[in-house]
Each structure stands twice: as C-alpha cells, then as structure tokens.
Image (cartoon, rainbow, N blue to C red; front, top):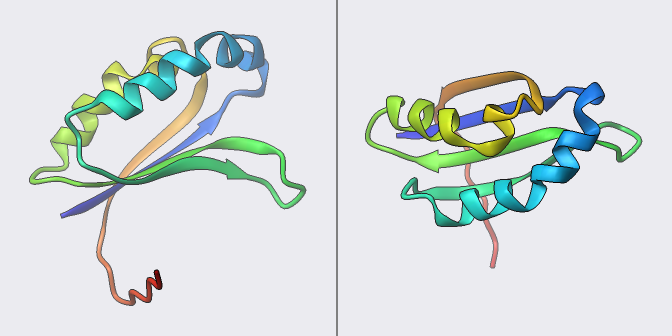
Length: 95
C-alpha cells in the first residue's frame, strides 16, 4: 500500500529546522522504509512550508513508526503531520 506523510513546518522553529536539516536528510536516506518520493512542499510564492514522503509499505503503522523517529518530529520542527493511505487512480510517469 502507498502511504503519504504530509508535514507542515512551524515557522517559529526555523532555527531548529536549520540545525537538524542534515540529520533529517540522513534519516530519510537511511531508513528501512521504502520511500518512493520525498521532498519539500512550497507555497504559491515558492517558500518552503513543509515536506512530503510517499512510501510503499505493508502497514500504515510502518510510517507512524518512521515518523516518530524523524529528527524534525523529535525536535518539534513540524506543526502538523498527517499520515494517510493513498490509492493511485491515475499514473502517467514518463522517463
């Protein structure tokens, strides 16, 4: 199943975000979770406001466990995190 994590950053935690940015990226790159896509979310003006992870997992709980150990979650960088099952209805990926 595909599961998406949508996390919105807390603007008041910008310095904490900067401090733990490398640890967050290292965690994403070295997790056992099968991440399909991951990257920042930007507002209409191009300013970063959070991040998204799309993972292929057996159980949604796998993403909840992954999330709980993310340095950005542990250090309170995100103001909100949603973890949702996602069902593909249209796929048009071109090489």
